Length: 273
Ligand code: HBI
Ligand code: FE
Image 1 (cartoon, rainbow, N blue to C red):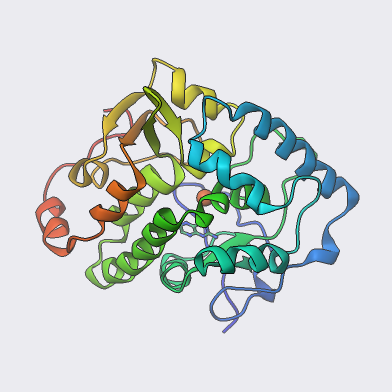
Image 2 (cartoon, rainbow, N blue to C red; image 1 turned 135 degrees about the horizontal axis):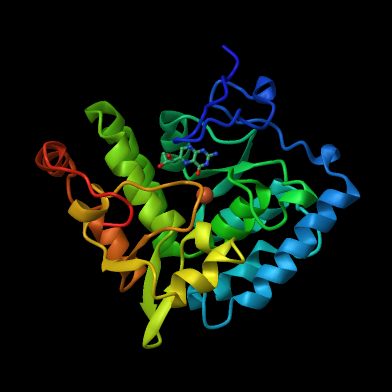
């Protein structure tokens, strides 16, 4: 069976990426030869702009880990990053053609493999792209996988996802991923900082998430986050706050099955509630 593309979330956009080259587990070889000089230039310009925005807005743990990625000027070979990443936390990057279905996604995370989309946005999409591309994944997600506590949380999330799939609770667990790994905020230095990849890789949403008075900011509580719907193509209207990555990890210590049963019958919250 060749891997079929997925249409992700509410977007009715055709999936991007060539899924014909993916294996059954949805991974593929990184198509390094396909990168043009324009692609490397797009990556370099995105990296430069985003890294100048970080001070005072990004979590210190992220700022400290970013140099470990070791790729500022050009899109790196994932195997080169894996040299360093595997030594640090036993995680490795695997290339995927784009978004993949939830169970293959959870399976990779549960095995400390992070799926990294291997294509990059066009220059016309420099300021915004709906789907995660290689810059979102490498710059947004990979640095914190060098952080031991966060790295363990992501694997625990993957294991939880496989259990959620068996319980038909993927949507509730996906919201936890969305409001932490993608769009989470952490209390730090008397203020707020971003640790979610979707914020860290966005030039507009990074200052907005930390400083704008518009969005709601709530302390992370599973029963609230798991019932709060999200949109994938606009700034978040609700952000959830944590005090530490240890707090995130401890959340995964409990068995979510009773929580899913309790929440299933309760009404959901719209993104802006
Ligand atoms: N696929 N490649 C990729 N990257 C993601 O971050 C991703 C995905 N599929 C599903 C998904 N994220 C989320 O819905 C998870 O909560 C399951
Ligand atoms: Fe992401």
